[in-house]
Amino acid sequence: MGPRDYGLDPETVNRIAGDMSAVHGMGVELCIVIGGGNIFRGVSGAAGEIERASADYMGMLATVINAIAMQSALERLDVPTRVLSAIPMASVCEPYIRRRAVRHLEKGRVVIFAAGTGNPFFTTDTAAALRAAEMGCDALLKGTQVDGVYSDDPLKVEGAERFEKLTYLDVLSKDLRIMDAAAISLARENNIPILVFSVHNPGAFVDVVSGKGKFTVISEEG
Image 1: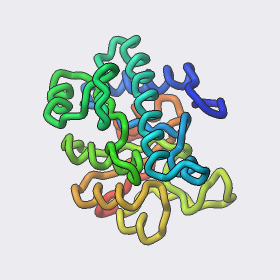
Image 2: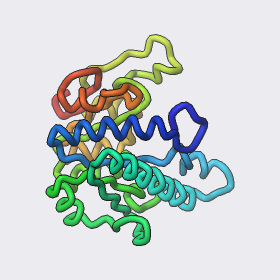
Image 3: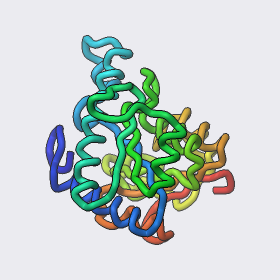
Image 4: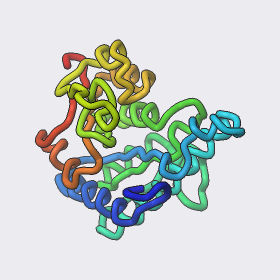
């Protein structure tokens, strides 16, 4: 949503699409899981009068809106892109079928996974870890608000400690909450390293894939 309070900021969408295009241009097979908090966040919605399951489904629909917006931005850059939704909606995108997703990657397309896991009570972090395992990904990159994992929210807590490397167990035992426990556990079971970087830094995505820039690595060894 960029500097906005909610919704889509075209400049931000185009910048992130540009970073994705650059990574795709490096010959990297790229699949994306997009959240929907800029439009509707299920947990906070559930804090009101909407029951949690219904709020989560609304959040999943928000991710489809974001996925279609990102697909449009990527295709303006001549990057072939497909959106696959865990909630079937054939009029706007393809249903998620693992073999179809793998085939799209083999054909050099960027694949955007929408609607999370398709189930309430699971975050898009868990969806990202699940899809990374299903696609046989070499790594899971999480673009977030800050340039790595900290002991506390550095935007709120002065002097929060930044970590260069962590083990999966470190993240769980320290309750660092960079991703939910289900996502961390799923990545650990499938030995998929997690790289956490700032989505706000232009070019950061390319730098992380190239092993440069600032990011935190979460792995079995740390």
